[in-house]
Amino acid sequence: MTLQEFLAELELFASEANRCFQAAGDLTALEAARIEFLGARSGRLKQLQKSLGQLPSVDRPQAGQRFHQVRREVESAFQAAQERLADRQKTVRSAEVFDPTIPGVRPVVGHLHPITQTIDQLKEIMGRLGFSLADGPEVEDEWHNFEALNIPPDHPARDPLDNFYLAAASRLAGGAGPSMLLRSQTSTVQIRVMERQKPPVRIIAVGRVYRPDTPDQTHSPMFHQIEGLLVDRRVTMADLKSVLRMLGMSYFHGEVHIRFRPSFFPFTEPSVEIDMNWQGRWIEMGGAGMVDPNVLRAVGYDPEEVSGFAFGLGIERLCMRQHGIDDIREFYRNDVRFLRQF
Ligand code: DAH
Image (cartoon, rainbow, N blue to C red; front, side):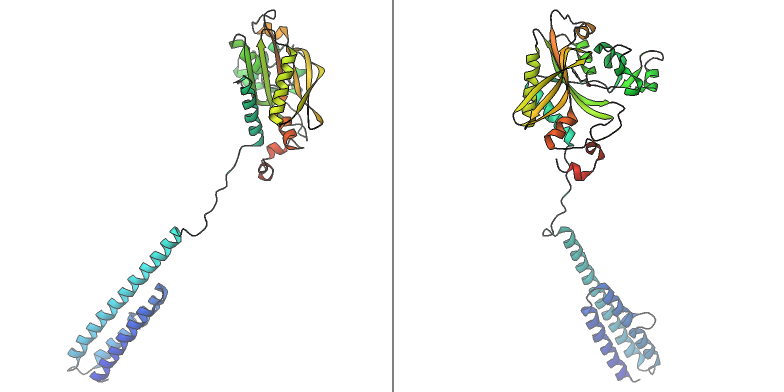
C-alpha cells in the first residue's frame, strides 16, 4: 500500500464513521457502529493501524500524524452521538412520567357498610328526638345482662346453651365471682346508664349482641340492636308508640304504622312485640314495654316517682327491610359485589 492509498483509506474511514455515528437512531445502533469502526480487536481503525505499520518507514511519520488526527476526530464524533442519544432517551422517559394527556388511574373509593349507614341514620333520627348515645361493654357480667333486668337465675334466657359464657373472662373477674358472657342484648346499657345517672334519662345504645344461633337466612350468632330508654315523670305507652312511629317514618321515609302485640319480657310490664308496617307489609322489628318497677328499684329509682319505656330493635332487620335484602348472612360475607350496591 502506498502513502496515497493509505491516506485515501483514512479519509474514507473518517467520513463513513462520522456518517454512521450521526445516523444512529438509538444507543444500540450506535454501539454496533462503534464496534464496526472503533472496535479494539477487528474494527476498521485497527485494520488501518496495521496497514500503517506496513508502510515504508519514510512515509510513516506523515501517515502516522494523519492517522492520529483522524482517530481523535472519529472518537469525538462517537462521543457526540452518544451524548445526543442519551439526552433524547432522557427526555423520552421524562415525557412518559409527566405526560398530562394520559388518563389517570381512578382510585377505588370505598364506602360505609350498609349496617353502619343504618346505625348512623338511627343515631341521627333519635338525636333529633332528644336521645343521647350511651355505650356499654360487649363482654358483660350477669348482673347487667340478667340480674338487674329482672331475669332470675333459673330463667331459661340464662341457659348456657343460649349464651356465650366466657370461662377465662369470668376467672379474671374474680374466680368464683360473677360469670362473664358476650352480651345477649343491648338492654344491659339501660342498667349501666341508670346506675350512674338520676332521672330523667333519654338514651339510645347501639351495638353488637351475641347468641349461639346457627347462621341461616334470618339468624346470625352476632347481630346489632338499637336500644331506647326514656325515664321521666308520667311517661306512658303512648309516648313509646309515638317515638317508634317517628323513628320508623324518618328511617323508611314514608308512612309507617306501629302495631303492639302482647308479649313478655322480665324487664318490662306490660311488654309488647313491635311490628312496623311500611308499604303495606307488617314486619316484626323488636320488643318494648314500660320499664318494670323491679328494674327501676334495682338501680335505685323510685317507681312511685318515675316511669319509663324501653325498646330494642334489630338493626339488621331494619336495614334488610329498607333495601329488600333477604339473607342476613350477606352483611358479613364481605363480598364487594353485594356491598357495592349500598
Ligand atoms: N332485649 C330484648 C331482646 O333482645 C328486646 C327488648 C324487649 C328490649 C323489650 C327492650 C324491651 O328494651 O323493653 O329480645
